[in-house]
Image (cartoon, rainbow, N blue to C red; front, side):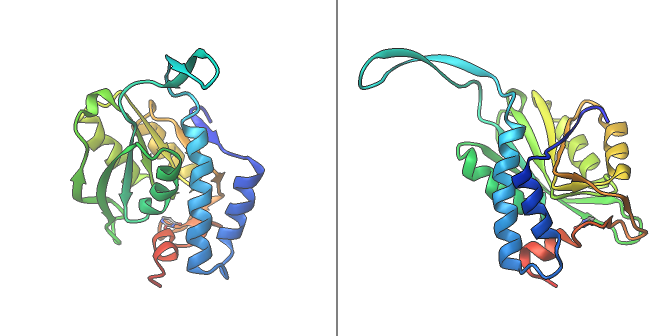
Length: 209
Ligand code: URA
């Protein structure tokens, strides 16, 4: 699948397996998601533009490298995106944060927007949209559509888990948006859940079920 980056690092896969287990507590699920998100942040920022800067070490002057351009924006799709956001911010603490509130209509599974707040200067920023589960793709498609109205420099999508249906839907709607994921599971069920998956990510992060 083009434009899909499967993050198959052993640490990522190990932590994901621990998260999938139904007996994992809310506490360990959240902690693992946090750790996993740091590792995914490392992959998703791999191609960030760099610039040369002149610095002095205690011993010498040197030309060193730093990340170029305006601060990155992590856009969290509420509410489960928050679980990934926290981990990513611990690796990129200067990043800006946007939020999109979308809920899935339980009958149609379509995405309905109830909140949208982004930082200033989006035209000069790279955006990383985060949501643990790319399932039907409806929320991701709606979020990217909305973000494109603000004309950011680039958009990437990061999830923990996806399935062929979600990838196909997002790529059909937004072929220019690369997808970063730790796993591509077998399929969606009739309720829009990923199989074998890990259940409802929001409920598992926040302990609401
Ligand atoms: N959202 C979830 O939380 N889990 C799924 O399996 C699909 C969508």
